Image (tube, rainbow, N blue to C red; front, top):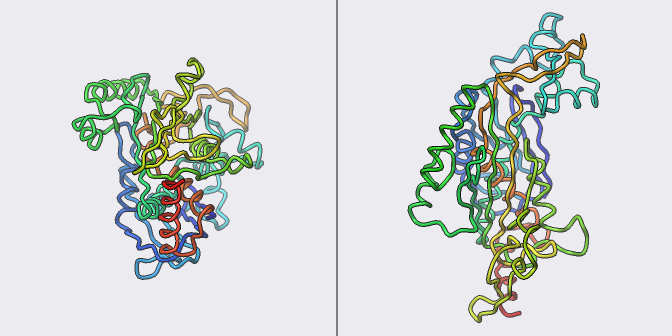
Length: 388
């Protein structure tokens, strides 16, 4: 399955083309739009979330609600484009329009300066429009499509925030109580402990008043992936490498770990390796899941646990020092509309990117031109694993 995305943050629309998706999967468009709406939620988001109300339009690859096997084209309009049409129009502009909202003061922590240097842009808007996290709208839409395929073959994905601004919540290695699981579903910061949520909201408010931003961490859990997805035979076929690469491609992510992650550095091997058991009804299992469901680049049948760390958003309403690329004078960096904290939204985006990566690995490993055949292949493989 190959994917290409295109579009600028304030351009007319975002577009994705997905090639290699199986034929015969019934698509629930409402679920995709619901995922897009959830991406825009979360305490600490900025004003653009009030402007956009994202909805997906399929331009190809789906007919009468079912995938055809041909390339799927997704389009998501930018409703804010009406305010930017003259500035973002592909037609040659007047000199006045050409210089309107021109950006010459790069923001520390963004790709503005480096992108301008790479592509020889003197107006850094040419960089920030594409490097913007607005592109993750497409990643959620693609992932929501992939989640419907995964659910059809018995694979589930979920996510939650584990830390914001140094305040920590539970992660999926701990069994959540019924009340904690219910609170997670309604939490504005995607945490399961009410007392931590209250403290986090207060900290976000404090950061907003100070013109500052907050980062944090989240965890994605994938259940139902059969053992042996991925491979140890080449570095670029290892599943954990693909998962880490997917999350590291997401804006503002600075670290990714599997299972216990960095904690493994301080533990002896006897407390790290997951002992193997066997039951006639379930086949091979692990007593623990310290390694996060992946061994030697392959799924081992246990839940896959991936944790990502997001840096604070670099656009500050109390800007840091920068240098104007035209005059070389020291200035405070320019300010674009932004969030105080986007970790809750990032957890949802990450969940969908992980769903896409798992889907790609599944489709690479199993015959997948048509859904009925894919489902049968997966069922046969699960039975093979149980009998091994």
